[in-house]
Each structure stands twice: as structure tokens, then as C-alpha cells.
Length: 551
Image 1 (cartoon, rainbow, N blue to C red):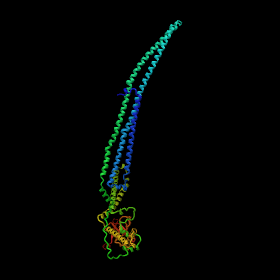
Image 2 (cartoon, rainbow, N blue to C red):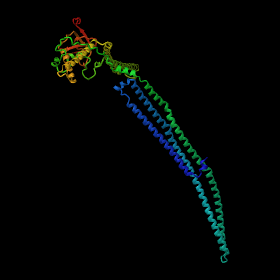
Image 3 (cartoon, one colour):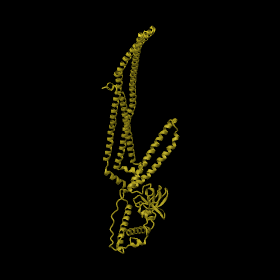
Image 4 (cartoon, one colour):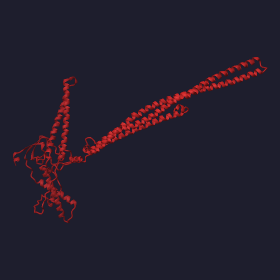
């Protein structure tokens, strides 16, 4: 099968068909190009999605990712980021291996097609020129033959006419001979032109056109093969990333399987455990036995005659430390507003961070020292004195960080020293709360019994309970005598009392000690008659009076 022999007369149709083939190839290139754009957009959207749900650095959300479920989700986001990368690879490979290659091939194909059809048109024009020459020679031969016949007839007429002179007859005879000779020459020219045309025509239909059409056929077949190979490449580009995409999906499955609900539950315990022990049992109070109830105890009369509002202030508030917080203000430097367990974790984290800073500054100091040594050995590289200021600055930073670390380590040691067992003062405070709560509940029950109409409302109960608590607290602590000083102390550090019951002190300040550390890490001090409170024991150096200590 050859287009040159089978389609020798279909030059125009072949020209249209090959142009259609190029259009198909360009359409396929456009299709692949749009696919690469889709892959890029999809990868971009996946990356944006992954970034959107990534935890923000140095935020509370980042702390939540210590749980295994959140870690698995984070792994899923990272795998989706890698998954997006594979779609970018698909786009890049399709662009480089298909789009760019085919676009270059299309240009070559257009050029080759143009050259082939140019040769075909040139051959057509040549055969058409030969045909025109043949027609011209044929017409000239025909015309000369007719002219020779007319000249012959005119000569015979003149020769037969007796009235015509011999000279005229001779002239007519010569003219007839000339015309006959011209006809013979035209005949010879027509014959040679016809032979030449037949030869050209045979070569045109059996040599030139078959060769040209054969080239066009090969060009078209190469185009078909090329588009087939591109389709295979299209599939292979997808197939190459399937194993990596599979690994991404396996990573998501592995992350999901790593979720440990027990571990997450333990982390919740570690995150919110206060370190306090539950309150003890409330003792039974037998009201059937005669008992004296003073005005300052928990009688209703004292509640009504006492102060109308519940107040926590002055000296009495110090007794409630650390269970009652002042307000939601700035976090104390020593995290004393937190329960013991949480405070210990915060202090430990702070110590670790400070140690990292110290290590970083130490490395920087070592680097500067080495550089200074290099400058000393090779003055042309730099001035050693130029590094003295920086070296001094780094050394001072290290010293500051070490002092800061010692301060936090002291607080940490204080917290860790009282975590194993509940302190005596904590028990006293808890017991005080338990007793007051029980007393308030008992009074509420008595209120219901003594109501004139026997009715009881929640509002009445709550109002009376607050009044009872106010009377109890105020009478218990306002009536007691100021505690005598049992010694003095010197503030080693500045302490900002952020919570109720604490007192602020300045480094080097001398104060009076009115209550020793009961094992909970706090010492009660007094600055003046009306200004007293608790400070961390590690912040002061205590000097107890011998007589007071002996008593």
C-alpha cells in the first residue's frame, strides 16, 4: 500500500488530511498542557490545605499536638504535603516529556509538510508547463497545416488560370512550398514536444508524485506513532508516582495506627493534675448534745447581726493561700498561681529553656574566643580587640542566665520537696474549708426548719450561706491578736506578690518574721503593723530569735 500509487490523483485531499493530523496533535498538546495546570492547581490547593491546618508556632495549639491523635493528624498533613509534591512531579514530567517535546516536533512536522507539498506543487507546475507547451506546439502545427493547404489550393487555382502570368504562378508555387515546409517543421516540433511531454508525464505519475506522496505518508505515520508514544508517556508519568503516593497513604495509615488512647489519657492527667490530695472526711457534729454557741460561731443571729457581705481581705486572706486567687492578672514569675504539679512542670520547662540559652551563649563565646585566637596568630585577618566588647557582652549574658537558672532551680527544688506528701498547712487549709462548708450546709438545713411558714427557697439558702461564711471568716480572724515577731529576715531576691495573701519585697529589704515555713515553702512576714503576707522561703534569709524559737 502506497499513497503514491493509490492516491496519485488526491493531492488536495492529502494536503487537507495532513493539516488535520497536525491539528489533532496540537489539540492533544493543549489537552496535556491543561492537565498539567490542573495538577499544579491541585497540588497548590493541597499544600494550602495542609498549611492551613498546621499548628501555629509558639501557640497553645502547638502544645495540643503532644497527643497521639493530634500527632497522627499532623503526620497526615505532612503526608498530604508530600502527596501534593507528587502531583507537582506529574505536572513537571508531563511538561518536559510530552508538551515541550511535542511542541518542538509540531514545528518540525509543519516544516517537513510544507517542504513536501512545495515539491509536489513544483512537480504539478512543471507538468502543467509541459502540457501548455504541447498544446501550443499542437495548435501551431494545426495552423501551419491549414495555411499550407490554402497556399496549395491558391497555387493550383493560379496555375489553372490562363489569364495569370507565369510570374504570378511561380510566386504562388513558392509560397505553397514555404507553407508546406512550415507545416513540416511544426509537425516535427509537435512530435518532439509530444514525446517530451509523455516522458515528463510518465515520470510525474510514476516517479515524482509517488516519491513525494511516499514522504508525506511516512511523515503522517511518524506523527501517528509519535502521538501514540506520547500517550504511553502520559500513562507512565502517572504510573511512576503511584508507589510514592502509596507510601504517603501508608504513612497516613501508620500514623492512624499509632494513636494510643491510653497514652492520650495519661497526657491529660499530666497536663491538668494539680498535685493536691482530695479533702478528708468531714467529722460528724452531734447537735443532740447541749452545746454553747457563741455569737461569733454559726448561729443565725450572728449571721444577721454580722457583716452583710462576704469579705476576704486583710490578714484572714493569707490563711486561705494558695487556694483562692486574687484575679486573672499577669502570671507570677515563679508560677505560684498554679497547682504544685503544674507549677513544677512550668518551672522544669523554664529551667530547660534557660539551660539551652546558656548552651547557645556558651557556644557563641567559644566561637568568639577561637576567632580571637586566630586574629592573635594572624593579625592581617582582623583586630583581636574588636571582639572584646562582644565577648564581654556574651559572658555577661551567660552570667545573667545562670543566676536566672539558679533562681528557677530553687523554686523547682521547693516544689519538688513538697509534692510527695501533702503539707501540714495544706491540710489545715483544707480542713478549714471542709469545716466551713459543713457548717454552712448545717445552717442552711436549720434555716429550712426554722422558717416561719415552713417553706424554703434556693435564693434564701444561698443568701444565708454567704452571710454565715462572712461572719465566720471575719469573726475568726479579725478578733485575733497580731502575731508577735519571732525573728527577722533579709530578702535575697525581689518578689512581686501577685496573689492575695502574698506581699511584695525588694532585694536587700529587712522584715519581721511572724510565722515559720510549715513545710509548704512559704514564710509569713510583716513590714508594718498593717502590712503582712507570705513570701517564698527561698527568697529570704531568716534569722530567728533564740527565745522565740525555744518557745
